[in-house]
Image 1 (cartoon, one colour):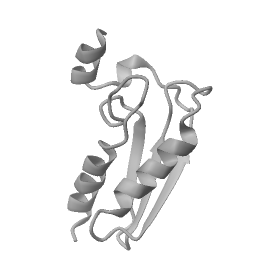
Image 2 (image 1 turned 180 degrees about the vertical axis):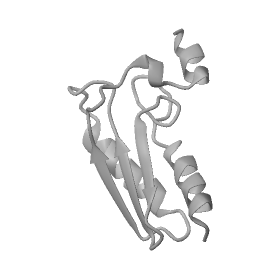
Image 3 (image 1 turned 60 degrees about the vertical axis):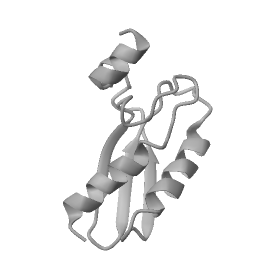
Image 4 (image 1 turned 90 degrees about the vertical axis):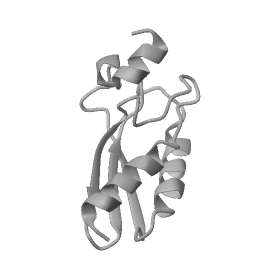
Length: 102
């Protein structure tokens, strides 16, 4: 499968990962910093949380691995949580900003 097509399907799968407090998905919130596709079925996801103290890190990691592993051609999902750069509301999509009143 074409790398770009896999990337699009992975990004679509990540819209199923919802921040329980804000009720919006990680893609809309701008919490997914990078998606890497290695061409051999491996996917690397670099993401952050709204705050370093946010307790949902393990839950989010599990959800990302679950949803992305369902994409055709994906055999390995590797996640990395980072806080650099720190997340700000400016990173949200326009739709998310509107929904949250920013």
